[in-house]
Image (cartoon, rainbow, N blue to C red; front, side, top):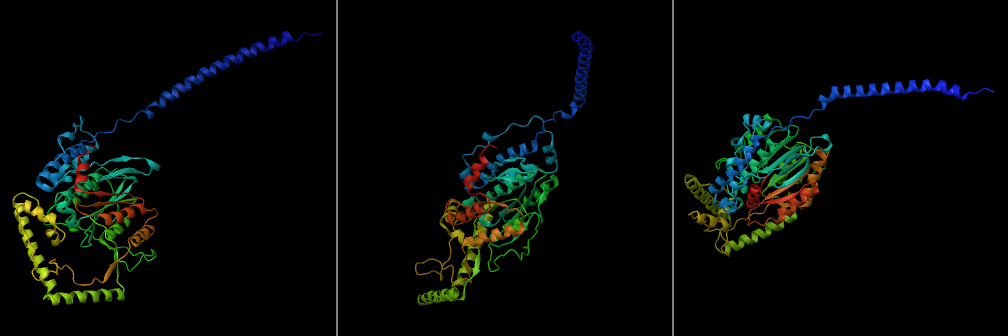
Length: 475
């Protein structure tokens, strides 16, 4: 009988010891290799230096707030709404080390003077990166409205005289909007693109900063500041052509868009179309009104209105008033009033005060304007001799318009077809209505609200008081 147990033990023990030694050697070698590789690659993961501070924008913030007091002093109407704001309460400490890109932008001319911050109080504007989808999207706040997911933005701005009316803060009030556009553009990241479209509510003229969206480089930002600085900055040079250069616009042919060729679109809608042709993802529309489109009247409707008009003329003749001379007398009276207002403005400018800006001479004879004239020590009376009705009121209109208003739903359909024809993805349209405290903006507010909602945007009402409140808000 053979005993095999001790033999297996004698054979297995050396093998077990050999395996254990080799395993220990391999473990030590693995630790050494991992340590060496990790040590060699560690510099690749060193933390980046902190981002440089931006003293230029910091100083612009301080200068912009300080300028609010100067603007209010120059304009009594603006002073009344900003008297509660304290400039010192919003002063910021100076950055400790003025280095980085903020200084380089300042060196290229994007400083407080270039932005024209001395012309009026600014607004709290937020700009941040969301990083959504890696497409350079950001959240952008303009005049109190915040638009998410922005990378291609266009500002559409009404530059008509109505926005400088005394009830909206006077001549300096427009500087708030102008300065905020310039300041916001200077803060855009270099991957963003921007555009500005100006329009006149009376003339229908359109002016653009560029024929296509502009990359937000330092050079292009400086060009925008230089272009927008003179916009409505002088009372003798106002409107779309008061910007640094004029680039007109002619609408692009869209034969397959299904647009109604009979519609006569208002100036703000023409400007919005010019903006959509730039292919933005976000539009901010600032306007003092939102009239709907027009369409030629039918022959039957026009004949009815003309018969009514003839009856009214006959009643005037029976009172001894020649209807054919009413228009002539009215034009002469308004021309006289314009000359008198120009003389008043010359005296105000000589006194270091802001001139009165009106879009229509009839505005001078409304109660709030007459009260402002009296407070300023002036009197202006309309000569209505020979052109008043039975109640003694001026006869402003005698003819029959060949056009009539269309429901605003047709305007919304028009915009929807423009979006589909010009853009792959619909642009968000945010609307801002600038009104005075004694205006009744119900209809334009409802229309601009509908426009914003149908186009993925927001709506807000701007007044001189709300602008002042935004300007006083801490950043």
